[in-house]
Length: 358
Image (cartoon, rainbow, N blue to C red):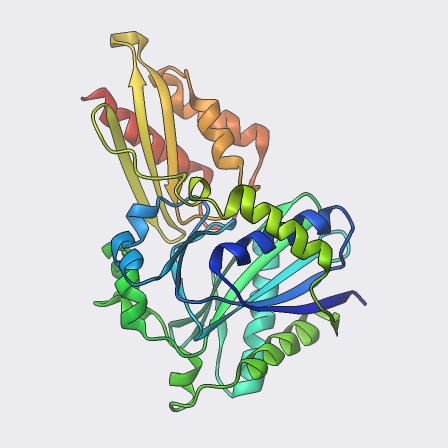
């Protein structure tokens, strides 16, 4: 039976929490820490996914004016609002000790385990909703996501305990396409909380933690032992925070490069949204891709796959772009959770075509 350590890093500033994520991954890859379940909480914070553009997803000025933190995650997915009325949970594990075929299989197994724990503890009917949500009655209670880094799987999620949806949505730009996909008029209709599901009484944080652990134990068949954050984790997390994840350069490194000479296209489907921004160079039959930027709320592993694809397209002739995308995916074979290779090809070709008309 696999043995996990459970730790709680409590309420910390958002960028510090994400830096701790990276520290966990690095130390787990090095064999310095065991498989781990972590619980964490945030002060009011807007967190965007690894591949998203800040100004597209978040009402930046509103957040700054109201003291709401602005943070970029190391996982993909969409923008979320996090405050003391939510709890985060994370699983860091060795794929060799718990082998499954793909990221989608781990997603289903972990989400079904957490849904089972919440349902058992609180008498609700929580269910995994592909591709990466836990819902009750069609409303989202938990969002999740993760990726592989070598043998290490990093997977995380939230549980909405007591959240003001209006405050949440005041911080985020929710695309109309997302609401239309769910046949909703307002973004607030997309989510629910344990407080709402339990007749207006919010459960204690400790009870939610125990529910998550219960589900992981019973459905994944693992033993979970209490632990504490190690000095090595705290020290590495501080270093990562100060040098990268805590800096504005990291948080704002992706933004929508709209302007002269840039063409764009977006594709929204069941797995989320991907946008392509393209700048071409040359004239006539010599036109080539000068640069391309891909953004969106998709999940890919490894996360640097997006950077590698962008690099692979630089200098490619306009008429060869689709074939170049296909060659990249055939050679690299990344694990895609919420989007397919053909989605990338389609949106990139549309952006290139738009550039060819300008």
